[in-house]
Amino acid sequence: MESQSNYYISSVNDGNIALHTSLSALEAQQNRAAIAAKLGFSVHKLVSMQQVHQANVHIVDSQDAGKGSQDWDSALPQTDGLVTNVRGLVLLAQGADCPLLLFHDKKMSVIGVAHAGWKGVVAGIAIKMLETMHQAFNCHLEDIEITIAPHAGACCYEVSQDFIPNFSAFPPEVFILRNRKLFLDLDRALVWQLTQNAVKHINLLDICTICSNDYFSFRREKDRAGRFGLFAWL
Ligand SMILES: [Zn+2]
Image (cartoon, rainbow, N blue to C red):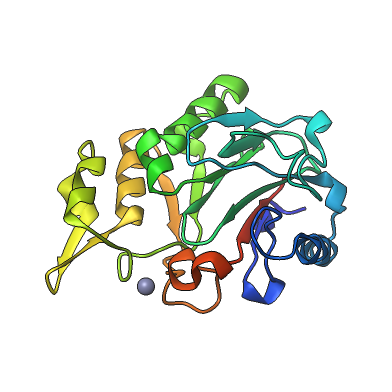
């Protein structure tokens, strides 16, 4: 496959792809299979995580193929980031408001995905991804291209005053005050964190899941929210 088209972000049209919510797991299996067929890969090549809003990264090898692809229990436990250099595997991160990140080093042919909600951002999941790519695959940080998928945007992601200390390690500009309301700008937080760590290439898709109807949103839909996916492969 061409290096330009090495990821896919599913939308509400593809349906819910999460196997762990109150929504039908059978339907999610079918939706995953339909996406796999559309993209031209076997669903048994999918590798999926039990995401926990932390900063644990797993290096995926061919033995991981199919883990979590059709059931929740076999998904990689307590993991929010995946990195691989194995062609043919398809890494999956899932979200509904949380930023999903794509990491791609074309030079070293290494790819990764991460689930980076605010807790993960503060815990340093993005930095852990960079460290893993560098240590395991000798990637240079300035060669890694990062794409930030649709997520809760600064237009809608309102937080309370007592939330501010969570981001005490970040510049104050990650918060935006508008009409006496406080909003968190996760794009700004991530861009700051990544550029602090030598990253040069960041693509912001700049789509807010809360005010777009194309993606699932936990804030908008609460317990009825499905999850969309970031699928990535080499
Ligand atoms: Zn919005």
